[in-house]
Length: 78
Image (cartoon, rainbow, N blue to C red; front, top):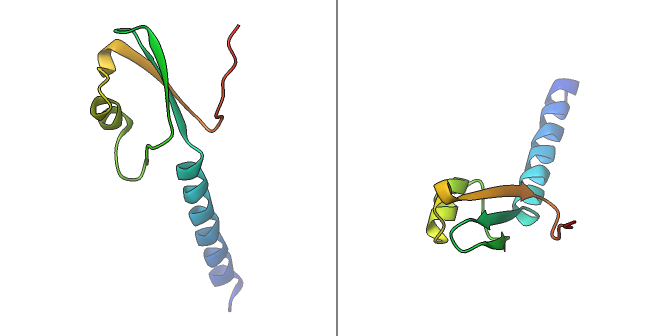
């Protein structure tokens, strides 16, 4: 196999690995101003749904909340 073809296959493996990691370890923290609570979700799949659609489906109004997407399960407050 040529170097170019080998490199292409390596890049495809890297993309698939990144996609799986992103899906498995993506958390959304939502600060909902309506009820004054913070929510953490880990079920969002960015390949199948926009974050705004996900939040609306979860019962949030995207105009009345702020969110953060991270790979960190727990956040610290001060």
